[in-house]
Image (cartoon, rainbow, N blue to C red; front, top):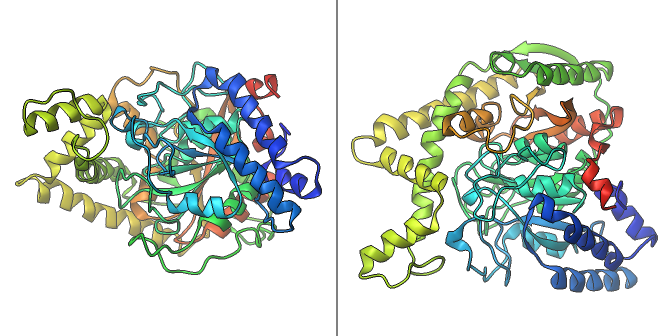
Length: 486
């Protein structure tokens, strides 16, 4: 089972090679043996998973199984799951048992998938290394001294280590694509509004988007078929038809026009990362694509704009955690103000406090127009850059991160950490889709190729990624820790 992708596992279940209960038990045993080294899970729901597996096997025996019936998955601990702790990686929600399922979880349950548990993450999705979790840092399965990326680092590490065949993540400024790159897996950030945000604990409401993380683009396509679509409970969800994302996976790439943004190949890019990306582009040329340089002139404004907009929205969203209705409450408050102050001071970690303070400042009287309004104007310019580029090319390609995974504890300066997102943040500001696929290694640590498309071009991105994975085997490489506990 170790070397099978989600797609292959689905075929094996259908053929009767093994049962869903056997498959689920296999992954639960792997988690028990290996996750103490990685720390990718916050909660493992073994009993629930086995019950779901029994139901999946009965459904298959009755002829009611779908493609993903009986497939085990993991959920980033930002998705509300009924009767299961949903912590968002924070002490603030360490005691929170969600009373309902997020729409994504509902859809996965309806498709017959099995949740093995909730994966570790940067607190409230704020971070690029998964070192900001109340439950401790996650380690990269390829090198236990390195970070797995963030904030969906637990999901990425669990997939890379073979503890689950796929997992769900969320991406606010690169939090699916960057950890996918660092861990050598495939991660898709859909168009904003393509996947419902209902039941996903909010960080920055105009930027957050859920997406799949798996070994291959084919796996992600099957998951997108389940989770994509309009949701009346989410006012930002787009009422637009959902294609079959697997239908065009094998379409030829002859005539594909690829743009290489010159701003993504400048100072700060690791030479080995650049070489891996350019080698990947050469593979596309051999498949019939043409390549040209393009410009995204406002790219260098993306990080400052993002770190005004996202903290402002976080300040607003996190104001609900006051120690009154749910979440952490301080002991013996002397009055209401003391309850607010101490509950929030004790419940939030340093990075979350930092972003709340930044956001509150930028939203305050006298600074709103100077910072927040201007950042939104810059956001519009960044979005237009992409739209202009897509008039001349079909997709854009570049690195997902300027470096491979860095060492745990290496980025103590918050600004240096923020700069890790330089190639991913603009995508969220523009609301377009992006995917990261494995494209090589540097010093034994994976490198990710980022592919970007125009709004609602997920099917094309999955096709482009899949064709690359048919021509290469980077996505099939496994770290030693995965093979140790096969």
